[in-house]
Image (cartoon, rainbow, N blue to C red; front, side, top):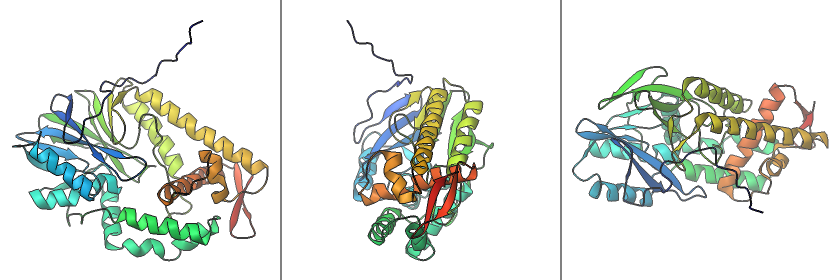
Length: 348
């Protein structure tokens, strides 16, 4: 008897990513490059859009020696003789905005971002030590992290956030529902929250593709985290609402050009998978809390199915666990209880 294989509901028009120093044309005049990252998620996608006689850059890679070398390889190879016209950063995370300032300074370019993303990137650059101060340190400790884990988390977070070249002192603000012309194309600006506060996505209705940043990725779930500066925030609720808006705004057959992994077709299917994924995590959290009060730190292995010791991964895992806790508290499925040290959660 033959084994049945369930077909992948997503379609991947380009199953092989570009090799280092090379690009792939995913649509006429739209080039895709891939840069390395020094993390478990070991790459970020860069896109270049024909812009008159030059190319507009969408996302820039992290600021480290490998990414600078990747840019040099592109500029000396497939981009040789092409000038860069502008830099668009989808959001403030270092793997996307890290070398934006470096490119802008080197080539005299303008940086375009949403206002919230630009201001956060600027603030982090101006005050990278802010994470080590109170009340942020107490925020992590109150949710069950040990002092050692808190120091590892804060120290790693500072190292990651420092991998950004100085942003330009001025920028071009991208606003939801506005239109942006790049070369002969018109893009609709869409913004979404959850993964970051005001992530920019660019939709070409005429050519049916969207540069979606990290808002929707194939095979992996974008990190959705509570930030220490907004400890009772609901980024997961904002993220789920954003997914519903994308389904209502964009057709299912749109070509999705994401910040990581492969371009794909099947946006609605993937959005539904992500919604179901987060609900399954919420249900697991509630079930764990029915057995007795749990701190957020104790819920990390419940959500991720394993203990996480790597400081870089712990940074995201803890904050994502809290995102699930906060939406459950807001919806009345969990309530906050006092623990021996700090706070714990119990089923409502």
